[in-house]
Image (cartoon, rainbow, N blue to C red; front, side, top):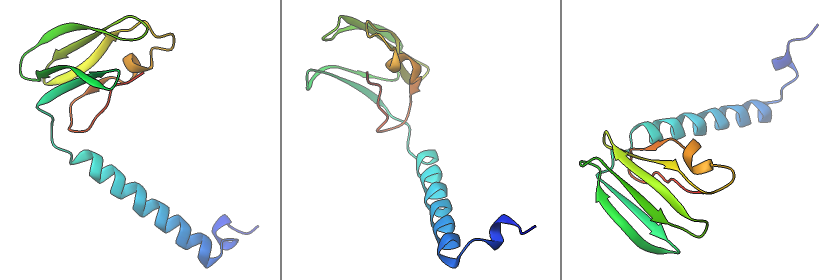
Length: 104
């Protein structure tokens, strides 16, 4: 019985190598992002709330479906309650690094 890699062509192996390289580069990029210092919330495309991640607080934000609770603690922001049906924003966990997003 032949081994799986014996059926692979040089193009297959090159594709696998390229995908592994891209994956490792993506992991390295995510791991080295700087920690954020501020949280910026937008409502209907406009900034409706900004705060420093240094000061713990909880705020209710008005959205199209109702109010969403944003909690800032331990240098991170997270959504703890939302009127949306799937609760995707809550499942996203905490945002700590620059460029991270919490959204429904």
